[in-house]
Image 1 (tube, rainbow over the protein chains, first blue to last red):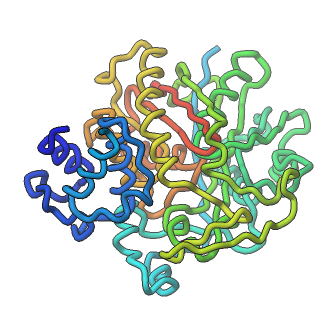
Image 2 (image 1 turned 45 degrees about the horizontal axis):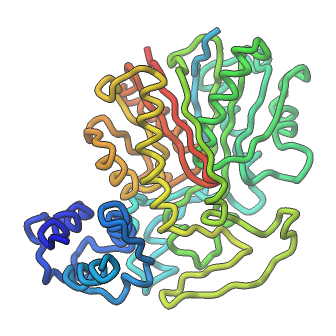
Length: 77
Length: 332
């Protein structure tokens, strides 16, 4: 799993925040436009691109892109 | 015989709930942010005792006046609602009488939500093609506000009540072309009001609140946002491809896409997924919210007023059931 690709896919779920602003360290819940709707879009993206089905509750403890990346990675391997 | 949309009118109940009203009720919640995201600034709500059939009657009266339509020519009434007055009789029969329509007029209700307008057009087209009717009054009317728990701030932000009246006839401004329809009852549990039908007639009283204060109860409207999101992002791109194929049209030959106005974020998500240009994608929910089966006729009415209903217009509805449908309108 490529982290740069993951960041790109993650960033695509946001309308107002520029894609270039996203890194593995980004604390996405602190972004101005963050809402539960972004979470739904991100879970949908993870299902489609990585064939990993995450429940909203599983995503809840993650705060940075890295943490979510690790969670998805752990489900793949 | 081809079927056309001849005229559309819509009705909004008088009572308005603004975002400021919701802020007062839920001071701890970020109403403005959420409302901005779903793209709704205010919604109209039916008053106590005002039902979907009342609103459908009002929309039909508006249609007759606004477009100078002789009500005696109506020979079929279709009412799409999930909020009927009674188990029986059918609300469409009550409406026939209240509108003073001919007693030789056919009338029936059908129970669908966000896909209802497209399904209504498909039935109306069939009635015309079969030589059964010449002027079908298609009514869509919904009062989800009566199904939503008062503390359910999310759904109260999104949904509004409204009704629309559409005349489908042998001539008109938009020819109704080929349809693509679909159903998957496996999704039934994800958008449901359990109480009130014969499987569960009495209240279950199983109300719980999650840590954010959101209520879940079998006695009120329940929507599993995540599942609905996944369903629409799976079904709608396929639906659009199918209806384009059935009409032998490339996507570039569609001048305007009018989707069910679910919420702005979801619609924009679908727009990007299907790769539709922003200027070809119509939004109208800021002042009315998600009005379920009336979102598409209301949007068509407003798009026509703006002069945007020209050429091929693709309409698509999707939601509760699951149920989905799309067609192309060839507009003059």
